[in-house]
Image (cartoon, rainbow, N blue to C red; front, top):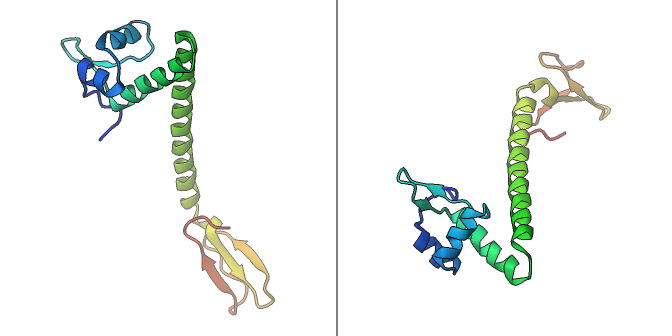
Length: 138
């Protein structure tokens, strides 16, 4: 199940978060936790929204103002987005490395020397051993 899928009505989300539905409406109005909307403009909360509501309650109990809580949630959302971007870039980098097979081929001579070979290049001696590492180990 996608944690961002808006599936809970306001009463269900309020119960899951341990809050009154009016509190959720207020948080929506001030932009603290913004649920999705149906075609009829009814609020629908996701599991992520419910987790944010619980975080709001925890931070409020610790004495943070609503503005402070809004800023914490904003930074957490930015952090999540940056982590996702890092995962995307790591995957793209791994794909790029794997598309360059010449960087994955090495030759070892009888004296134990190791050298990287370009794609299509043969080892210098017939007694050399060629090792290929498909997962990018160097």
